[in-house]
Length: 263
Image (cartoon, rainbow, N blue to C red; front, side):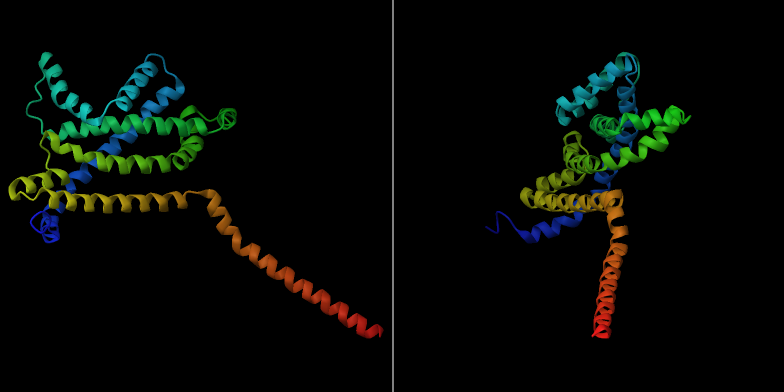
């Protein structure tokens, strides 16, 4: 069994795998930023139903959501340079990581756009009408009225998408990126102990996923105004109950004294 799998090798390989973590986190960070910016733009187009752009956005979202991210990665990495070469644009000198950023950014944007669009549509239309009636411009309405509510509604889905994005970065090694999985694969190719390297990568991914889930849980609780309202009024309510009990005891004492005086 020791020749097949060794925990000692897992811990020996773990620091080497951990050294590739910044690459994975950078992919997640850039893809999340691009996804939020581009996804918000796409969501706005689809909510406002801007002609032509609305149809193009719907096709883009349907394509991204309907195809595996590995297919999208190959299209961006192999297809886009060929198309650009046809119009005399050479991208052969680009680093491979740029194609990863583009692929994961577009993928995240498509999924985040649907989350943001659903959150915008969840805001009652009466609030939009009231905002316009109060003299707010459309941009002011979105920033001051709709955006705070959208953040609260979209946060749980955003957390789930971010955790899924972290796990999807494991496909970056297919075009030669040395991320966490790429490092584990390289270690296995050199030492012929592939399983130990992948177990170390799995431990790292599980730990990061748990951390992200906890972070989003804390954010969700802090932004849950209903829970905040309950907690803020809990102490005064207890004080009222206590005061009520004290008043009842005082009344009973007064009644007892009156009875004694009458007797």
